[in-house]
Image (cartoon, rainbow, N blue to C red; front, side, top):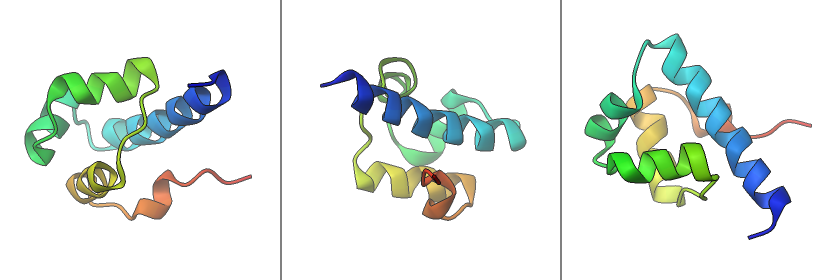
Length: 74
């Protein structure tokens, strides 16, 4: 995977982190609410791994936000 793509997914995680912070929620709690393993959540956070659309839907639902919140705006 190229550096630009990893940076893109890290920016996506930053958007998720903003929502987690707003709701005072931990990655552990997000994992429990979504059924996504905590190690997978940390792979998104730390390694810039691409979350599949299905998991992004679960994350958006758990955070009670639209998927549009995670779109990069230029």
